Length: 278
Image (cartoon, rainbow, N blue to C red):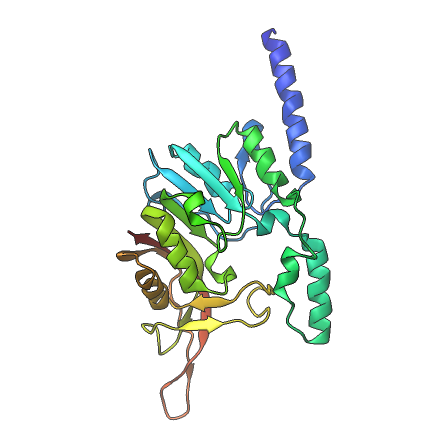
């Protein structure tokens, strides 16, 4: 094929890719060949620089991978093996689940979460279409595992030098157990990014804020939000030897003046990222 024909073929392929990208829902913004970027809806700025550990020459698991932004980033940063693990984002029919959620809101009820894995479950994993398209476009070797991290056989899953647990912790109903399982598969360091809360007057206390409904982001799958101290404590209790915060929103003054002085406790959500070392 001559140079002109090759350029024409590449242009056609780029337009096909652009059309396929435009036809899909994307959570992550991923740079693809041909100057194409997926229109992700995530508002969380991606981790950069030292906010991620050195991934070169290491094995990495990306738990809750969704479209695979961090899976592909790990590969690009020199990881020797990358596993993308998800089940919820890939297999749940979000449109039908949303209709059910809306019905529950109207009735003042909390949804039954077990229906996600029964009534709204799509075993052919249509929600993985974006990941699969990006993987093909990037000629990626990232491996995929469809499964629930909280119920998978960890012996079969294996262990990894670096575990990425990003935007996942607040979606589990047993956060300490989740971190214990994370410790079992982590050989060097786990990167944990999560919603967190500051409680004015109790900034150094290990507290957890429980969301029984959709108070956090209108999402019924958000459960527990820790203070930064609680997150560190949870990681230590799960068996990690040392925990370091690598990203945290600055605390603004969220207290209110109380009659006669003092501060009325108030809450403010933020996001925090820690490295938990084995």
